[in-house]
Amino acid sequence: MGPSRALLSAGHTSPTLSVALVSSVALLMLAGCARASDPELFRADPALQNDFTASLPTHGSTGGIKYEIIQGLAVFEGDILLGAVDESGTIPGKMRSRGLARSDAFGRWPDGIVPYLDPVDNSPTQQKNIREALEHWMERTRITFVERTPDNEEQYPHYLRFESSYSCASYVGMQGFEQAIMVSDACSAGSIIHEIGHALGLFHEHTRSDRDNYVQIDWEQIVDDKDINFDVQNANTQNLGPYDYGSIMHYGEYFFSKSGLPTIIVADGVEIGQRIELSETDAQSVDQMYATDLALLPPDTTTGATGLELGVTVLNQGNLGAHALELVVKLPGATQWQGISRDSGWQCASYGEELRCTRPTLAEQTESRFTLAVDPGTASSEDVMMLLSSRTLDGNTSNNHYNDDGSLTAAAGNGGARSNASEPAAAAANDSDAQAVAIMPAMASAQSGSGASDDAAGGGAGNGSLALLVLSLIGWRRRQALARH
Ligand SMILES: [Zn+2]
Image (cartoon, rainbow, N blue to C red; front, side, top):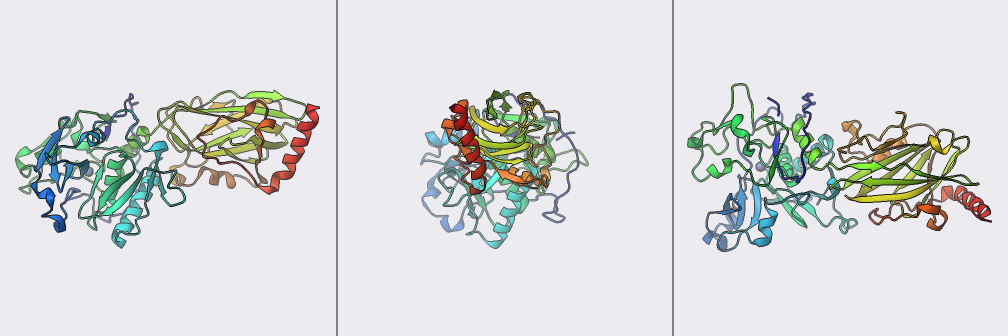
């Protein structure tokens, strides 16, 4: 049996995942503790037991989803938060649309980047487990977690806050603005990996529509009133990949048992409920959920008396933003890369004939156009090679090459080795060879010919005010000016 998980509806057809059951190096984060004996739970805070919420009903439902009401919050399957309820126990309008009934890309974290507040106010145990969980997600997937600070808070309006509480609990998918993940000292790093999985958009594996083909629910053993935690969820969810017993999103055998007998029965030898690491399919499913389609257009080349100008167009044709983009351009025989059009959003460094440009993000359905100037030396414009990559999974890489004979390589983390995935794309470029590295200066757009950048989404990187290359820039401008007269 291959592995999977129930996902938030992506609104687009999910490609079949190839499940490579390569045994990943076991991260012994919780030595010896392979299975969770207790479910992650949202629990009432005893200090608040007698507040106004005590008068609320204990259960409610919306859109076919039944939930418990605990201290004013609608709670689903033990640890999934749906939002605050009103006096009648229903989730008011806005909240209802934020719980489970989402479609398309809503509920995804923009560009696959998840900002979080440094958990400095959590206990040392919680801090350690939170950091382990975040590192694990960074190592195993293409999602990037970024600490939200006063310096970048305008850039990141939506973010996670790890709230110290009596619970391990989370909302499903991005809710907008500050979003809590509840953690207690009893939440292991594995349980926090699980809760982060919810925040990224994953539901529990055992609620997949096809689960009855793989597990048997023994309804007689379930604690009274907890049977709703075992309902199959059909609405607005999507099954990605085969059923995955090994998913970190799967309940354990004894979750919500009132008798000590299993509530979920599996075949002999099958283990469920591990809380050590993401399964291979967990990681693939999340990467797939945040995938997009980057593409390169053939460059426009203009040859003048002074050299060559390459008009480059990079597209994000997908429905989700990408991050940590890298464009490698090579012109065999070129003597010098000279500049990039101003405000391109790209930052470039040259390594002899090769130029490596990086860009933090490129939003969905956006194009980035810019011009590169190069002294071609003995090269011809027809020899230009290009390779585009990103940390975000690219659903179609056949349109990411131009004229590439296979000699171009992407940075680590961009389709390469997972082990270095958390390093910025530029880091790999820095040690790629012993040749002198030159940071490309930005050119005034008026002098960059047809390539004035139309890019608004670039974050303003690449203004390249580095003094060390001013000389070559001046030389290039002088020759431009001479050519014009
Ligand atoms: Zn859960």
